[in-house]
Length: 316
Image (cartoon, rainbow, N blue to C red; front, top):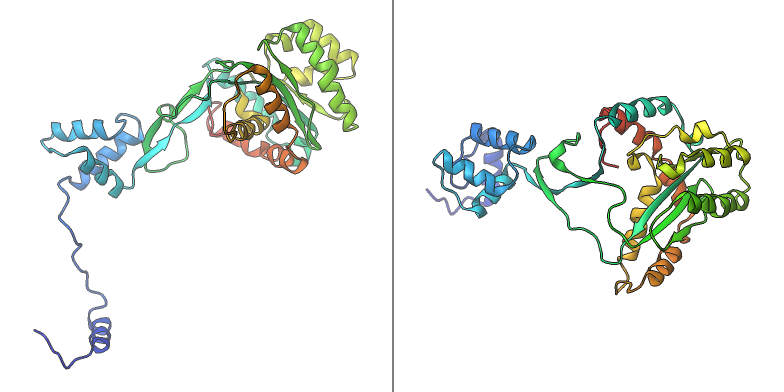
C-alpha cells in the first residue's frame, strides 16, 4: 500500500528502527549448482584435478547440469576462482631437493647486513626471437605452490647471446657478453680475470671479507677454477657451497628479469647479436646501488621460502 503523504526520510527512519535486523532475500535466480557441488569443484581446481572452465563444464554435464562455458565462467567468478598465470620455476630434481633444503638451513640465520657481504653472479641468455607464451591455472588464492601451478624452466634453454654479470651491495659489477653462447673453462677463467676482478677493484672490496656466489656448472667447479680462486685469495670451499638448480636463491635473477622487461620496451626486436649485445650492456649499467641493495635484501625471504617448500620450487 502506498502512503503519498509519508516522506522518504520517515520511511527510512522507520525501516532502520523496526527492520534493521531483517534479512532480505538475495536477488537473482538461485544457482543451478548446489553449494556442495561448488565446494567439490573448488577443491578439484585447487589441487589440479580440474584445469579450467572446460573441465568444469564436462564434470557438470556428468551430473546432468548442462551449462555453457560463459555461464561456467560466471559461476567460477562468483565462487572467487579466477585464472592465474603459471609461475615459471626452476626445475628441481628429487635428488637436489634435500640438498637445497640442507644448504639453505645453513644460511637461514644470516642477516641482511651479512648478505650484503656477498657478490651474486649469473650467466643468462638474451633471445633474439622473444619470450615463450604464458600458461594459466585456476585458483581461489593460497600461498603454497602446487606442481600444476608452475611451468618448470630448465636453465640454458634457447637464446642467442650469453651474458655474465654480478651484483654487489655497492651496485652492478662489470659484465661480459659471450657471442657464441657457451662458457667453457677457458672463457670462464677469462671472465674471472677481467670482469670479476675489475668489479672487486672498482668497488675496493676485500676478497677475505666478501663471499662469492656462483652456480655449480661444470666449468665453475673444476680443479683449475679452484686453483684460480685460491691463488687470488678466495676460499673456494665457501664458493662451491651453493645448491644446484637454485636460481630462485639468487637475487640477480630478478635483476635479469627487470633487464628483460627493459629490452622488451624497445620498439623493434634486435636483428643481430651485436645489436642485442649493445642493448643488454646499455641497460645493465643503468641499475643502481639502491636497486641492488633491494634485491640482495630479499635473501632472508628467499631462504624461508625454500624451507617452507621443503627444498622445492618457490615464487621467487
